[in-house]
Amino acid sequence: MRIELKKGCFKIDVYKIDVELYICEDPLKVTAKVNAIYKRDKEKDLISFPCHGYTFCTNKNHRKYYIILSLKDLDVNTITHETDHLRNFIISFNSILENDDAREASANLNGYINERVFKFLDKYKIPFKF
Image 1 (tube, rainbow, N blue to C red):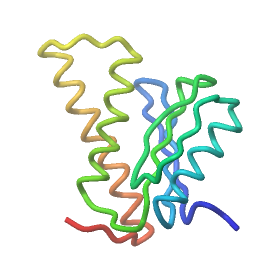
Image 2 (image 1 turned 90 degrees about the horizontal axis):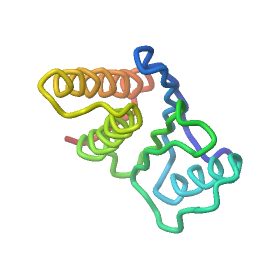
Image 3 (image 1 turned 180 degrees about the vertical axis):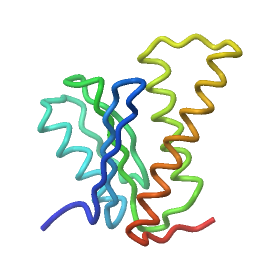
């Protein structure tokens, strides 16, 4: 049986980043999907707790990130929480300093990531709460 219900991908060309987005049925399936990716990439630290959302990359590839969300109790807070993790990882990995120009670039990146995630949810009619 598949762990995820839906899968999508998008690119963030300016940072040469690929993002895979998964929607899983519930928090336990989110944990299972995260651990499946960690095992595939030979990561040592598996997670042992149920998650409504999880965002990460593996040590194998810092240019590929994953956002995994639980359909159960999915809400705007969880979605934007996870997209903000992705934004932070990209800013940190690319050593972008916090100044006025960087804050604007960070805000634009945040908007782009959220737009892509919400378009994915809309495309597949995935419900979420406000």
